[in-house]
Length: 295
Image (tube, rainbow, N blue to C red):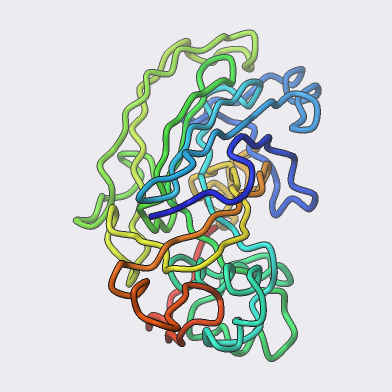
């Protein structure tokens, strides 16, 4: 059971240090108009809030958004607020923030701020030894805005995802999510001339390899301090020179909201003397894998 210990109604704020160039195309790759690009900013245009359910089996809530980019896909992530301090749980048990970052990374992925890229489990020790700022995060869901850049999305943190794909872009694996389909009806004043008024796009999530199956993720017991993050999904638009799409973007982290919550231990542990949940309880090794990749 999860109990929210901080505010349950939180406003998103722009990320202070964006992690990549923004995307200026919608989910069907239609380019926005130069005037829209000129006037849009997350500081001035966006109004996004999250209402968290005070108690639930998983971290659950509703995101209400206005003024985002039209027909844009945004990843939903839980991100650590502090660098991880070592390669095992004991090294990160000195405080809630580092412990939270560690737990999120073991369920999801590791982001190296110094490299501007993801780090595999196998490479984590090397990056930490070099003094890099590495934080854990879990990509667990996504939302898509409408023609006005608005959205209302209910979520529960029960998945560990690698990245999003469009149907037809990549074959969907047996462990990946089911696709969600979107009828893209555009306000063509927000787009370059010649853009079609309508498209139909399916989006699915790739499962994060060697992590729990989609729907089976459970945060370990303890007290968490994290950020709920919105990242623009850019669909591998700028992965290399041959596939570069003008204005395609590179997975920028754009908005975030602080969240604090506590995950209760199972009843059998709660009744055990000395078995209090928290950052000082137990040592858990990394899941074994050697893969790094996109944001």
